[in-house]
Length: 334
Image (cartoon, rainbow, N blue to C red; front, side, top):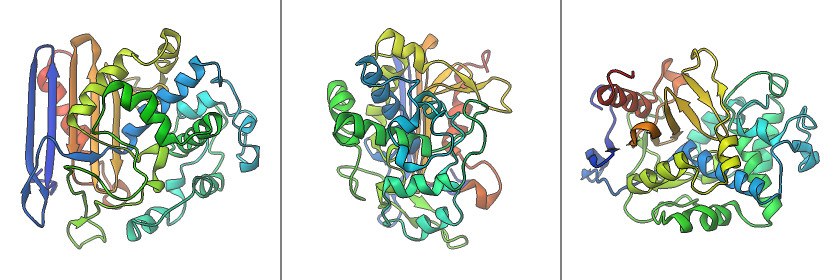
């Protein structure tokens, strides 16, 4: 934290009948408020685990198939190869659709105007101009656009909002009372402010309040440590899915240049025996992973975001803390 100017952190480790929970630093620089383990954070791409679960529940209900082509639902979007890109390709990041975050000037625009709103169609159209980057199923490439489309699909099939579907299908049944899919820039309850050194060279600036539409189904959700611990267990056990749907979630695709150590299923990472997801969104960096065989969960929540493209190296501090912790816990495995 000192080396990388991270204001605050919450770390939780649960293993069988033991736990270790610590809060470090401050949740609000201006008021010097100490960080609390109860604080809510924006969890970024951990959102994808919730969206993928709803998609698989719809598969269980026979309302969609993972082999359905995107054009079956959205012919009007003009997605290149949309007649051959399936819902499975979207969920496992092998669609070949570009990431709208890579659209020229998009990231800087959202950093300079964090309250700016976008429609889902606007985000997809930015991605269309960058697509295709490969043939469907030919490669793996992480694209947030895939999950914007899956969120749109959920709303089309259910005739309900994505927020409502996640709440009624997952949050309420699981008792995740501190987790939400926000519709405004506010964070309710006890929360940590989020920081980002932007504009470059100006030090840490407060980016707590941002428009959730920029990430939506790809990364808009908010949660806290206790809820994420419970969700990590539910996710790794497939509790809310049929046995077949859970099996489909864990059909892995190797992430390039990782020698098979990192893989991706349907909205979930496999990282050297741990499963879960990380999240990065302006102001916050998070990591949530569990190794089922050891009944161990590690969660890291940080209130700082950095952009790799501007500093030139990996700034996923939450993932780095997760791995360092995993190696201490299981020195013979890692």
